[in-house]
Length: 100
Length: 195
Image (cartoon, rainbow over all chains, first blue to last red; front, side, top):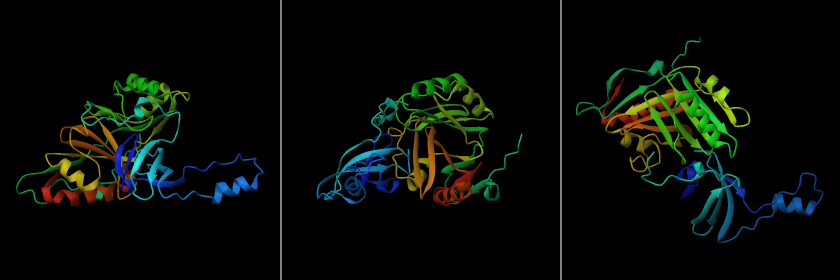
């Protein structure tokens, strides 16, 4: 399986570390709602189809990326920086053949 | 100044090795730069970090992920979003960069003693490296000056193409000897020379 890192480009999945379900919403640290904490810790959608995931390119640029992966086909429809504010052009992947 | 010892010393054998009768495919060497510095900028401060690197070293980093520049024995490249490696044959670049890169721009980490720089050059350099790393080493996909972060069996490596058939590889010092030996084994089939 290949994952296309927004910074490094397509890389083998062995360079990446799975950081978990990207749908989880962590309650506020002071939250007392045990149901919300239970959902955060244990409940997963486990869909047969597109799944939002967080991966880290631990064997490359080490950035975290948000990935939409189809759990049945392993096809990846989207891989974007996990940080919403990383929009600098240095995060855009170089086009093959682009001048240095 | 502390004398720096090479981690490759016990296994560094100058001369020709492997199947070199039909020509030397690659030349391996250790470049031993005086400064290997990592610059990490805060989000949004990348342009100021690039400007500071230009001011201190004279190296103009191009835009784009993994973009880099080589000028003689000086080099700089991006290896992660907002992060850059700066290399110079002279010592003391970290201190100069730390003056130019204020805490509001980012951080400067001196890795001069923490990384080992290994150079592989020759007509078979792409071939040998392609056996190590699952990335595209073709000149069109990996132009001169550009750099890639990747791993070889969990040995993290930053690779910069510093010439048409020349690559500089930065590995952790503690893994350098093992990596060097592996690189030698990989280069045996094409014949290699240790400079």
